[in-house]
Image (cartoon, rainbow, N blue to C red; front, side, top):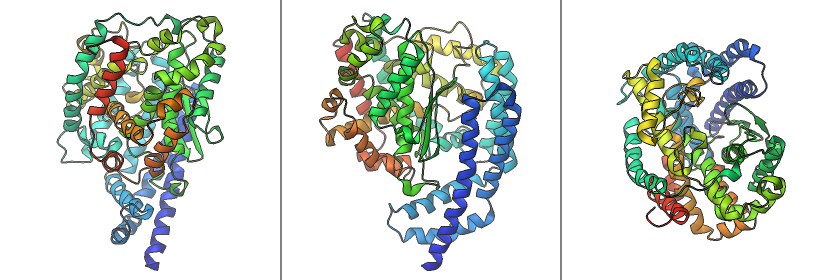
Length: 506
């Protein structure tokens, strides 16, 4: 036993070193997305590639594999939910995947992604798809090559989806999406047939600094710890963690529309609350982060939608917001404002979409990336295919590529495949987890009316956050809800909420 403990400490030391390298890479990405001057793009890509290559080489070293092999029997002797047992099994799972991908290939992909991201930040405002076209074609080629390191898949996207949502395959996601779409489309059509809510109160002039200050007040009330985090501005909002003690968020402010920046802030704070809530004992290991894209998005969507778009939330915060923007909101009734932030209307931008239509945006992207990977859609034809899909599913089409196929950073700063399904899986799980929370805390909405989010935050921290990635997403969902992924609670939530907003028949 003593020999196993020595080997376990050695494995942990190796993993901490890899974690430190990956965290340094995350710092470089955060800097590129926030403050780095454009002239640093080429060098930044090289720097990130170097760190990615070294981290990959250290993690996939043969002696790391031998340590894991030696420790697996020991893991089997430990309680199933022990930190050490879960760590050894997670290390084994990740090692078996990582050794398939050459470090040099990973470095090439990392350097390409950094360059592609920088070009995208300049090309999107200029509506210049031709500038990113060759880069996106290379991203597609690299994505296919990455998938091919994992032969035996049913669909070429399967390995790429598995990176972010372990155990999920393209066929499974398509099935879930099909079942959800069958339920969603009638709701969208019913809401669209009713008079749309007046959202003019959200538009006008909302000074940036006051928006930022109000948003920070709100997420601080949620439990976001600014002693272990900060918020900055960027082109496309994101959350990133460098350690349990340093979890940062970014947002994007539109002074002409209050909703954009505010819901971006609450969304990213949900990701950050998850990462800040990880048990500090897991720091520096593979377990010290969220367990999957879907579970992570469930937390961002919980705080963005189930909390920040709820009536009890605004019963507390709306009087405070009126004092921040008296010239815009002082005479606007709460009911008008609440209906405005929950207006249902087909739109072009995913991150600004309402709850009912949002998943259609995700499904469009998911199918397009599958088609690109399959080879049935060439990158040069993406704008046309994107516009056709929007016209078919939402009845509208963008006038330019900036608000079309160039609007999301994912394909321009990472690989194609597995980039989007987590958003809709997260929506489903947000309602499923929230329903369980309400069983334990039936007073959640009354607490919101008083501006008290400690109960909900505490329940999420105890049941989800503290575990990090000790458990796979399927294991965690089963532990929390007693069953697997289930669209039922999500559909019931939407019908109840929008039935009250838009009347019977929703």
